Image (cartoon, rainbow, N blue to C red; front, side, top):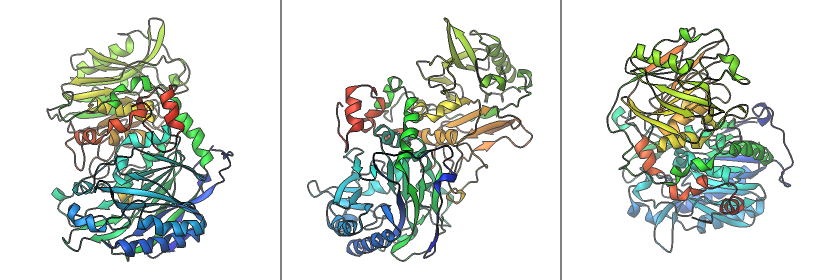
Length: 614
C-alpha cells in the first residue's frame, strides 16, 4: 500500500519478504490483524482541541481496517515545558477526558488505541508521562514512563506502575515510551512476560538546524533505536512518533520531530516505515500513518528461541544498583588504538599482524584452526597451547594487547576459550564462553563473565555470537567494561535497518546489527573480527553511532581496520555512567529470576505487573 497523507509518505510492505522461514501458525484463535503507527502532531497546550483531533484521527485510521493504532508520546498537549507550574493546567487524569472521548470511538469502531497522555495523578498531585490503552470495552490500563530524559525531568515523576502487560483479543500488549528504548532491559522484560506486541509511543526530537555543535549533543533521535526492541524481545513493535516543528509560545523554544514511524517483526526486521522529514511546520492533527499486518503467532517461536539461550543464574549483578560511586568504573582517560583483523579461507596464523603499540588487536574466533573448524569439533588445545603461545608472541612483538579464541580441553571438558595477552607476552585472562550458539554442542558453558582492568581501560571478553543474548553485553556494561573484545565466527545475519536519514553520521552498508546494538546499549567500544569466506569481516563499533561514533569496517581488499578512541567514552547525549545511573534494577528483577521457579512462573503468565516475590 502506498498512501500519501498531507506531506507524509507512508509505505507499508508485505511481511513475507522479510520474514524468510517463518511460518504462520494458529495462535489461540487470534487472527492476523492490521496495526498502524500514527503520526499525530498536537497543538501545544491545547488539551481539549487535541482530544477532539485524536478522536477524529482514530475514526479516520479505522476506515483503513486497522484494529490496533499507536499514537505518539504526550499527544494531548505537546512536549516542551519548562517545569511543573507551566504544564500543570494542561494535564489530564487517566482515566479522564482523553480516555473517555477515545473510548466512544473505540466502542463504535471495534479498535484498540494506545495514546500518550500528559497525566496528573489526582491523589498525589504528581505529573507523569504516560500512555493509556483503550479498547472496544473502553479504558484498559496505563503505563508511566521509566526512562526519563532531560526534558522529562523538568516536571515528570518516575514511573511507578512497573511494566504492565495487557491481555487483549489481539494478544498480549506492552506499552513503552520514547527514551525507554535506551535500556535493553525493558525489551527483555517483554520477552520474559510473553508479550506479542510492543506499542511504543515517542516524540523523537532533533535539534534545530544551525544549532552550534556544542549544543547539539542531544541530536540522537530515539526512533533510531527501536530495531533492538523487536530483536531482543521477540515481539512485534509498532513505533509511533511525531513530525514537524514544535514551539513553546511562552519561551519560544523549538524542537523538531523527524518522523520515521515504523513497524517491526519479532525477528528485528522492518516491514513498514513513514518518511523521515526535515524541519517544517505541520497543522495539528493526523499527518499520516503507516500500517502492516500482524500475526502474533509468529512471535511465539522467536521468543522461545531467544529465551532458550538465557542463563539467569549468571545474572545476579543485574539486580544490583550501580551507583555513581561504583569503584569499578575507570577514572582515567585512555587513548588506545583499537584494531580488528579478519581472515579469509586461506589465512594462516603467521599472516596476522601485531597489535598497535599500546593498543588492542582482536583476531577471529578459532583463529588458529581456520574457518573449517566453524562446523563440528575443532582441534583441542590445553592452556598455554599453540594458540595462546602465538597470541602472547604477537602481543609482545607489537607491545599491545591481543584477544583471540581457541578450543580448550581442561579437566576432561571442552570449552570455547577467549584469551587476552598483554604487551609483556603474558596471558592475563581467560573467558570460557557462557552462552554458546545452539550448533556448538561441543562447548561446555562457562560460569563467569570476565572484565579485565588494563593499562588501556577495562576490557570485557566475549564471543561475538553471544551478543544475541542481551544479558551478556548488559552484564559486561554493569561490570563497567570500556571495551568489549569479540572474536567472531561469522558477522552475518540481521543487519542494521534503521533509515540512514535518522543518523547524523553515515554507516557502512550491511552493518551487522547485534554488535552494533551491543555497543550502543552498553555504551562501550566493541571490536569484532571474523571469518566470512572470501570477504574478510573486521569491525569497530562505537557507543554513540547516531551522531558521532559510526561503525567502521575493513576496506575492500584489506583484512584489518583500526581506530584511535577515547575510553571511557566521555559521551554526547549519554555515556556509560549516565546509562547505569538511569537503570532501575528494582523494577527489572524478573531478568535474574530462575525461569523454573514458582515466582517467575506466576509473574510471566500473569497480566498487569505483580511483584510476586521481590
